[in-house]
Image 1 (cartoon, one colour):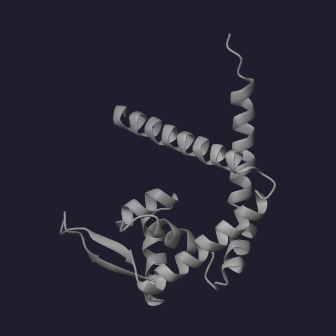
Image 2 (tube, rainbow, N blue to C red; image 1 turned 90 degrees about the vertical axis):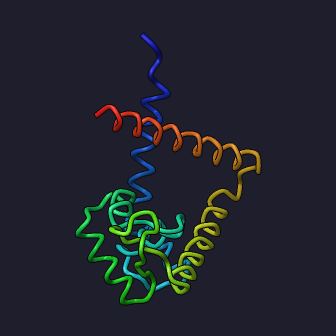
Length: 156
């Protein structure tokens, strides 16, 4: 039997990290650091759109783990606030793409800078090589998770 201690430890650490990162308190802290007054439920949508050029409602729902109807309602709020707009999908005219407006991009930039400040404070005692190693390993892990999930979905 293989030693599973590191896998068990990783599982425990992931549960702890996910709980920490999914906490509404963390979202409010990040929004406060960014100086943004935004509904906490809406900012993950903006951040997801900021990481990509444009997404369909279904893609955005899948990305943030919410259902289509919830995302549609939340996007309507973001549209009313002039943070996003819907446009035609060049590849498929039946679909609509959601993109950030310039106002939405400014908010995403403020959130990104706030996240960088907070992470810099947390990692202040870490060497640059340790920071780089953490980023590299997390990228490798995220890529492996996504590849594994795609392979499983293709088999289903």
